[in-house]
Image (cartoon, rainbow, N blue to C red):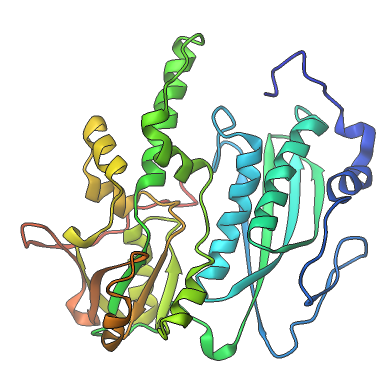
Length: 348
């Protein structure tokens, strides 16, 4: 998009920082009573009364976290919001507000930033969160997005990483591994395009995997669903860095071990077929992939009957005493120590 010479390009320098902020935020509406003052002053003012406030922030950097060769800017804006809201959901909390900060180089015209912001505003609308502030500045190298998400929760409903107990069941929402394979498909097609720019990829057979990579969804529905089922998670985390890494985080914080059953890990049929095409082991992808933005949590064993028939949940293992360690139980009934092989933010 940015290389299209026939497309209208309005220099950001023409607007200036405050002109850009005014332009991007002119139609933003406020929906939450907890938002007393949003954009337009030195700081936002929030009032959560008897609720507790949950805050999380994330940074997305071009060339590290995303590639604009195949990531549309509108999708990028949407995904940036979802990634942060997922952290709020992982506390068993309700997302309510976000702040948005952008740094961009002069290769980005106003129209490009406007498209990015359309994705941000769409996510805010879908998840019913208020955009209450942020910042804009220039960047020497590409695009940087920083979003802070804010949520509310009753103190007795908060789910931390450190609450799992031995005999608790390990539960995951949705399916795992699809986002990573979507990335592999996109990377392959990018390489083909670089060799032959006239080649037009047919991605229909990979539609689910690509959607999971380019336009993931946060599981904001799970808090209410668990409440309806009268199930309180004892610990919870979102799956952004890979299933194995997240299980190890729960175990470390809760001082427990875990037995994860390979045959119980949920996988979409499209993921299974594409793993065969790429000659990749599906369990390895599920354990190490990341960016699924599903929720991983533990529950008391007596709550099993409440969730066992629900299609949103899969029981994939159980927690054990810390000295028993963290293991994958293979389909062949072999016990293998679980290693963290997911995304490492400090590796290039």
